[in-house]
Length: 121
Image 1: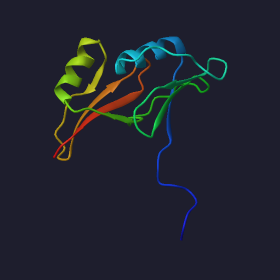
Image 2 (image 1 turned 120 degrees about the vertical axis):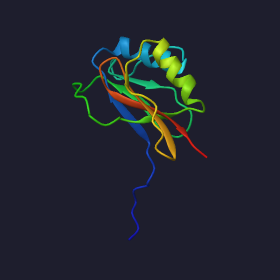
Image 3 (image 1 turned 180 degrees about the vertical axis):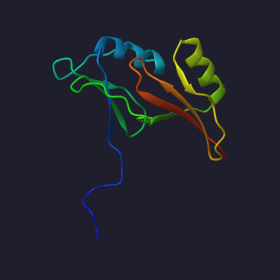
Image 4 (image 1 turned 135 degrees about the vertical axis):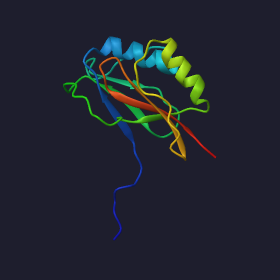
């Protein structure tokens, strides 16, 4: 059966409780300049490369998941690990070799679980 729904992610929403602090944190994480919010200061679109958008969302209460909300690619997992540690970002689980990926779990400033991964081979 054909579906009118594409199997393509358009946007990821990350719940935040302190929008200015979250904007500063994510901007520092990606080395970006801080921009402006929309929706009366409740949404911030983090400029991303590629097709998937990342929005910080201040509309909902923060309820932390046990699974990462999303992951970001890196070409150098050791450099990513060193960067996160130097920035004082909480490492939830160190780099693991799971075959196809080398994931590193960390949390944002309100405890949202995130991951950075290096693709192997």
